[in-house]
Image 1 (spheres, rainbow, N blue to C red):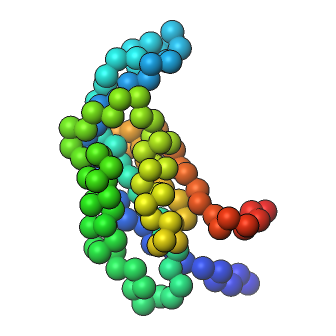
Image 2 (tube, rainbow, N blue to C red):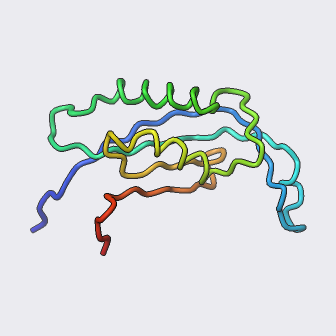
Image 3 (cartoon, rainbow, N blue to C red):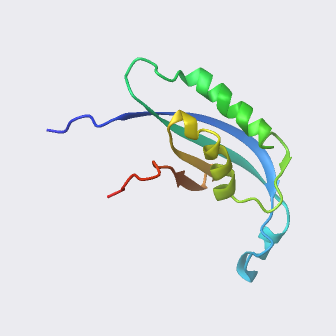
Length: 124
């Protein structure tokens, strides 16, 4: 029998942005030019109990506010910023709220997940 070991909540938001990859290999050289994506962001936070410790709508509002503050709003020009960089910038803003991970995808197809752990926490 399995036992519950913890809980998380996830909230989502999205924005339209343009980025490029100056160092793109020849095979995908088109990525060196600005191109458009819908960036989908999922924020995952740990919760300590089952009765809305962190309320979805309030956390989602905070996520959207952070995204705007970081420049991730509609029609954002991101330079060479990658999904990994976007996820890290957002996740770093939620460390005081027990962030577990942040996922950023391009057009809901390809994505990255950046994980967070306690400074001295051993994983595995």
